[in-house]
Image (cartoon, rainbow, N blue to C red):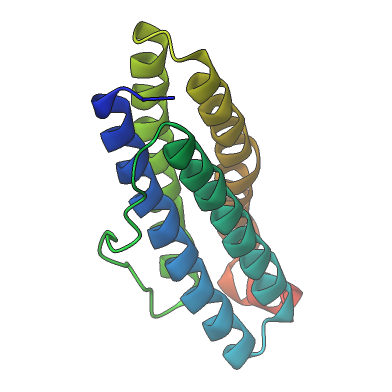
Length: 155
């Protein structure tokens, strides 16, 4: 099924964002592990896997629409040097993805590509209700209990 070229461009742009998020989560998870924070390592490694799942769904849709997935592009990684910065950088990336997903969902609706819209709505729910929510919760905990208590709870 030949897809709308604008939607294919948007899907490839979203793909770059998902792969960037996976790379950033991969790096941060390994840093957490190296620093002795297994709970953060496990959760962020899980987020990386979910980002790769999102990327896979985008690739499948691009191929179905007879496009070519572009896995060569990434946005610049924002690797933090401490836990709060890492969490903030990950949250900023997720919020950017949320905004982009909403834009492409609107375009898919306008183009009457309801299947793409449905795939992206599922990704949006996962991004907002899981990834973004968890990151906001962690930053809130740091504010409430202090960084040292938070870090101790992640050991």
